Length: 365
Ligand SMILES: [Mg+2]
Image (tube, rainbow, N blue to C red):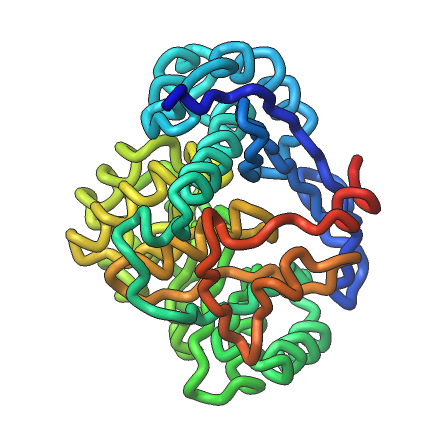
């Protein structure tokens, strides 16, 4: 049979308005009024389409990286070759080991997993060795409310109302975590994402002050995030579990943070780290070393679905991240819904769901 080759790669940026029941939060130094993402559509010479997703925060630069560097190298290649993304990473390494080029490769890698599943007629989780569970819990990842305890209480209650049984905050104070604990009661895991809030000299006191509220983990407490030695000291000093990884570079960073005893939960991001291929390698390595993989998934497209398949197939059950907001149109609301805080694992070929035409038409940037 003649080879199935990559014939076309298109970048489709989406800017989706969202409501998190508060004024716009800041993102990269500006008020954020839309959740942006970059879909990557790969078409084969047989007309089959695979969908990927690249990290949305960098999308204008990522479109340029895809069109200028990535696409010319892969047109005409065998679409079933699982080594394409790894080869690209090596060929393009001097253009940046993380950032837009890696985000573009991530989107392509995810689309190729979708294509491989569709060509074999199996779900992506089957390509990962098979699902170990039919549904995955989701956690409500609240956006930042800047220590407004009223907004925090209201939105924690809203998340519980909608069925979520795990809550993550993007806050930095003991009062914010305590207010959340008051609303949830003792049985609900609370995670605290601080987005690199402190330097090593001030971090211990800040993190210890949250201990009475019993966070399941504290996420990215230290700037810069690659300071694994200081994170290991903090983890030892506080006894509080640590999570990190959405800003890591490559699989080796994860091996280093685990070897440094800096981390309890690793958080590779499928749309940033190079796609599902490295995410799966990181999850496998971490869980063989007693560390749980709870991927970063602050997006709703094919990257989210790829993460869901990995969470279905990996040894340990862990929750998938859901940004807690209402979108102008929620992708996969009908095909892969979140029901009472649980996501059913799709069993259709490839990623198991297609982006809605209405989504592409209404929110294309
Ligand atoms: Mg985070």
